[in-house]
Length: 113
Image 1 (cartoon, rainbow, N blue to C red):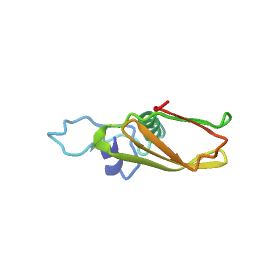
Image 2 (cartoon, helix red, strand yellow):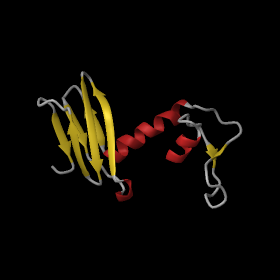
Image 3 (cartoon, one colour):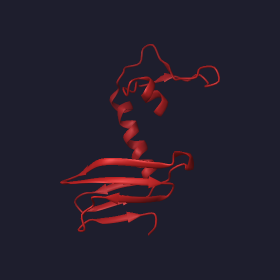
Image 4 (cartoon, helix red, strand yellow):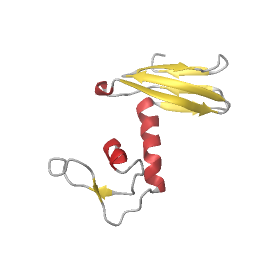
């Protein structure tokens, strides 16, 4: 999906051809697909939330971050995450996470707990 987003100028189409990578080195556009497509554009957000185990709960002032990142990814940073009136930065590597900018009246739940 990351390769497709880069190839399609960050405008993910609703679908692209499913040819093997050994035949085509990049995702191949499908002739009649819509681009961008609303549900396709939401997929990266779901991937980020899933890989970071990110579950913000603004009314309760709680941020859960339980990353499950592949080792090959190294460090992943999510910057300027707006949670109500708070802006937070999240850094994760493997199963560890740290935050910057989370106020003291917020609870941080991580994989370490």
